[in-house]
Image (cartoon, rainbow, N blue to C red):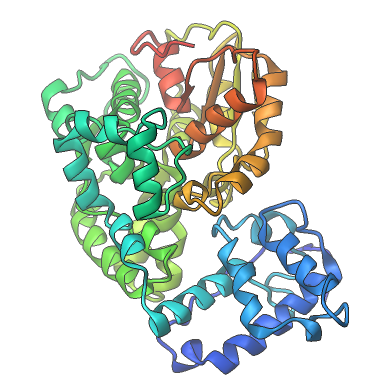
Length: 452
């Protein structure tokens, strides 16, 4: 045994089909073991709110040790976990192969799954996790949906807060009037036959719920950049990857989504296409989480090996073939936030690496949590914490004083921009919106306009 994470972390399979996984007594015993180690270590105190909650429960208890904490209060720690994986990836010295074998995020997921099986999932939460259905309705009724969910529509948002528990001030994603699949068919893409990668790469863009129904500009920018670089693309969205249901502890539904999506994408892999997930949370699911939930499944393994994160793919083209010429500087520079689910892919800071391919452009990296946590940060009970956690990242972006702010996670981008506005007060932030890095690369090519 060696101290201090001197070896690469190993993620064990999620043994959710074993009866032991669902045993509450065994679960409490494992939580007690892990919480006691965490209390003695405290290296994660500055990550999410789970660890301050845990330490406060212990420190303020009658004994000052874990034995003074009621078992029912363990849930308070789990409720603050956003499954970002940063404690496992960047902080914990006791992850496997260390003999203590801590995997805090998967322990929180296990608790969530056991409680969901025991008590059921809240009706509203269950509906919010049906992102494909909600996305189709939202796109069909985009004008009305965007009017109702705008944070400045105080009447509608107060009603939403009472009915759905979504904080009235949280900025919510807007819906596109047409899906990215439809937009891609309408716009087409003309390949640059002079590009170094022409004829050497072709890719399927797994649209993801967010890009397909909300931010189609991300998909359009990705397709335009890849076409400029000679890469043939197809756009496919068979179903959601299951991340929203994973956050509810509905592991069986995630396994079903893995089977459905892999069955739709693998025929493209058989025809020589790479798979690109357009948002990092979905890339993380396809590349890593599905393999842990469906261990030993050859289809899931094969899809994992063929899947790229979007920024990772562009950097891979640049390294192996070279990018097409024509990139122009992004005047005023870019502050790029490294999203947790991109970092959890253990591929390096690909968003920053990609933007540094743009000549004459200052790229400032923000390696702090944006605080959003998906739907977690929009909930009434969590929004103020999400703002608090995201404030250091917002302050860093303001201090960088760049013309552009970007994050690979579009939800993190929107939340970061909102916290920047709240933090700046009378000082209006220089950018009016936060972008995806691929949108800025498209702008540098003159393919799309992203106003700072």
